[in-house]
Image (cartoon, rainbow, N blue to C red; front, side, top):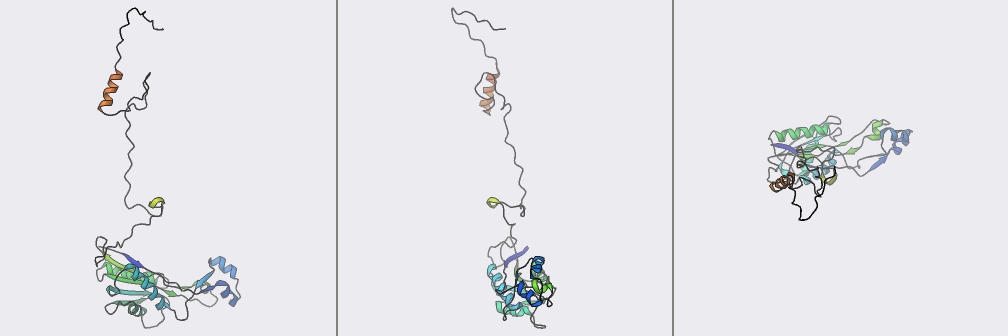
Length: 262
């Protein structure tokens, strides 16, 4: 059994505010903040948006991408540092909007900037333990900062971390739909080959150099071919015949014998 992410989604509000507008109110140096924070603007929620509404939008994308029935989700965990209610959990509202009720386990997490990842970890652990087939971990925030603080220029609003986890056997959903939960490394190299950031799943076997016949680079004197270019039995017989000293042909009748130059 293996556990992996089968669906993910995100949501960012459409509204923006530029750093110059915030700096104008406090009489601050906007170019200095832009250089120091490397930011130009930040996202802000609309008057009718909060952590719950953004979580619902992002979770719908995650469930749609996973292609699963929301009723099969066994747990929903929402991690945030800006829950709209002090007592009422955000997860129950998200579960009701998704149609994952009534048989579901919900809880809210608060852990500053890592609340969303903690919710994802618990969701993955429950699926790995076999308590449920699917679980949803969400991270969303409408972050705030003290007036005039650097966080006021950078803390924005978004729901970037909804992930649906599932437990699989041989790359299949529990419902029978084929989908690998553990994805292969991204292939960003040329012609689909793994790039430097994506190591190969299996080591490449060493490539053997082509075997060259013995004496392939030696040219016999007085011959117009290269010795050893015909491997096999026929080639060996040809080399054997060439290696033997040819017998001298008998001189023709009446021909004068030619003397060899010393």
